[in-house]
Image 1 (cartoon, helix red, strand yellow):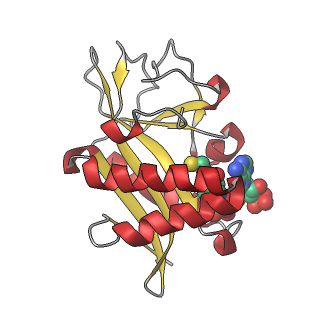
Image 2 (cartoon, rainbow, N blue to C red):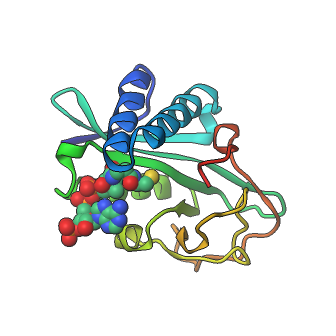
Length: 179
Ligand SMILES: CC(C)(COP(=O)(O)OP(=O)(O)OC[C@H]1O[C@@H](n2cnc3c(N)ncnc32)[C@H](O)[C@@H]1OP(=O)(O)O)[C@@H](O)C(=O)NCCC(=O)NCCS
């Protein structure tokens, strides 16, 4: 497996990876919703606001993690949010998700990104340094249906700060069903 950065020319492969993975794990409705989300994230998000990490094997995209900018109106910290990520069903539980995230978080750190946030299973994301946070620490851009899945980590030597102000996600994430 090799990990690459960027998505230009891989939009179709990425959309299909997310469609297949989420259809398998959550059913066809969720598969379609996440595929639409990924298509829009890749098409609409300004380059400066998105980072995509792909796990590839023999030219096939078998895993991906998409990070986009979260802007806190009264706070200078550089914050990116992981959503969504997927590892192809046949390749799950082989450590690929963990390796992909460890690589991605290190690349974000090297790129000057100070805080990573995600929204998902604390047991899974805790394996790569995410800890539960509250909305007093970092407001979510939309109401959270599962507040215990709101997670964050500092990518610097400083502790996770209290991020000031309301937050804004990229336009493609500004939809119901995701939060
Ligand atoms: C979640 C996902 C990305 C993990 O990728 P992966 O390559 O299988 O993960 P790893 O091999 O690095 O880690 C697997 C470990 O995490 C655990 N794990 C996997 N998925 C988990 C989940 N959804 N919640 C909690 N733990 C999970 C497993 O128990 C496994 O532990 P084990 O090795 O002790 O059995 C992958 O299972 C996936 O794409 N799932 C469907 C889509 C999804 O839920 N995406 C995340 C939300 S955006």
